[in-house]
Image (cartoon, rainbow, N blue to C red; front, side):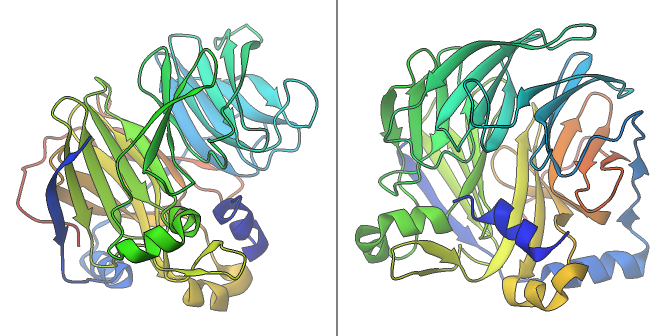
Length: 369
């Protein structure tokens, strides 16, 4: 993919704490080279589909016997429904456009029931609920919610329950915003961005929030909320019950960015996490780690996505680091089936299947490396 497409993706621009832990740096390049040398690279299998759909398959969600895939650059529709696990195409929805009920910039998708999803349109600051996510049906838009104006630049979300959505706070005032799914009203904000320079946060809060752009995932039982940073080696785990916070800072460090004269936070270090998913047993996150200056040197040869799959316990301990045979931008883990699905945005056939997750890993005291 071209670097201008990379920029389109990158710049569409809970209280007690157990502390922050930092590890000595081991570069992603070294991790990959070591896995190649030892013959420990995990091989993927292309999942063929019976129609040419994808331009940039970014996120995949599964509920029962159906899967929905978000395609960021599709010319007509953002969301595509398939049977699962055999991936027979069923329908598309979420028309791209500026008209009523259409989306300008789709950001994510979450199931809210067996055949219902919520989707986020950052371009309009709206959330839509669709029903009829099933074979033989055409998904129907049921709700159109205008989000509170305080929730500007809503780039990711997850559902706490049937009435509440959590969205990373792009103002920099807090880490998260919580809004109503019935009115779009801001209900509250929580947590602070754990930046090491509090003075910078006070002076340039929106720029810090942009530099700390995060992806979020709730555990299936909604007991923990996990956040990973796109431009830094940072994992945060928040307990909904105890209000405890575990912060993990990996060897590549916290997000590095420059504050532009206009007050924007422009990433200046590395592209790090691409996606995160919390399951009943573990936290799975896909990691890149390459420096922006090295990415720019590659020009059109650069392949987007991360090759390093980190698997954590719910307490933040690394139990396994796997190296994949190609970079992927989005993940879905089916723990019961022992499968990992990756979105390879660099290929024509973009769904890749890995057999890796049907095991119980032994917890250790190792931190991120």
